[in-house]
Length: 432
Image (cartoon, rainbow, N blue to C red; front, top):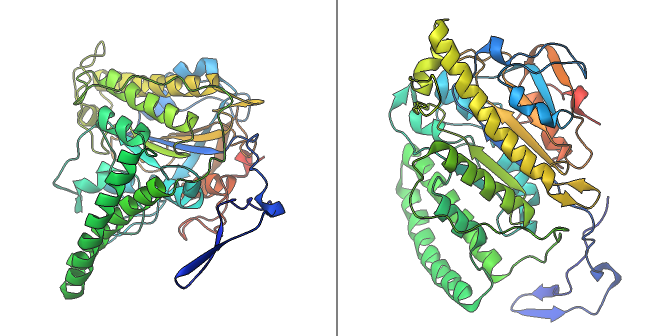
């Protein structure tokens, strides 16, 4: 295993004292010639019409379906994965299990793939991960579970959800505002002192709370700890491990509020994700293209009049099937846009796409009946040579979706024997 070079600023620390080290061989400059791996997870709600998604042929000899046809120019850069089954029922649970592989039970889930990878590699970048979205959170109950659980697919602990940022300007500022200047450090010190007071009060309150309130406070404290980590990186920024080989094309700061046009909004978030990877601001990104119980209107598409959730319960009616298929195709058009942009960024002998792995799909196959078997999934990018693409990978019937999550996690450096204790192996056809 390659050892990480030691920082020249490393100090020997003892009680109340620190001592600088002399120059050591292990303090040699970091190798910045090898591009880092990135993980990009893209969730689409409400499933797809199976006959319009499923591809013909297996292995390298397959033909794209109508929904996947926008990916034609990217053949070889992705694999379609079929035969994987999810856990849970209804929109809420099937959204919650998309990146955890587990069923939400008694308001508890597993840690999602993105957050597991972020915990592994997040020390190297200003932000350990970024979670973006386009649709405001919703409240209520569905199938016995809070609809709020479908606001996100990212879980940092069994009880802690990580909510997506849906405002492009706020996301831009969080990603790219100055973190090294005196004003940024002064603000970080002020916020850290406030957090210290908040944490003391919260911990004191937790000792007096019941089990339900303790769980809520744990979720709150976890989010506070995330802020603490960000502030610490402002005060003591990590040394860069990677310098982009192509100068990033900085985008203009988005305007305030949410764009009215859905495509403008979604592509803004995709552009932010691309730039975050390109500048090595983060190596882990998750995009909720919409809420897991989305009722968004797609009347801006020709021939579409229903909301997305409504058309997903199509009952095999031709008009609703046509609308459902068109919306799914629209989502894939936007995924093709992001993959194309990632492929255009050169990184040494590869590209941003070839050094990444992108997981795209939905937590259910068909919204009509909330079918959870044979999920619609594709994997793009080679994770720096760890993942095989360009095939239709058909898994054995009954293979858990968590096997794919386990496969991608191992390719990105996780060392778990199983994924959240529910996987039964790996998807061998994807492993190089």
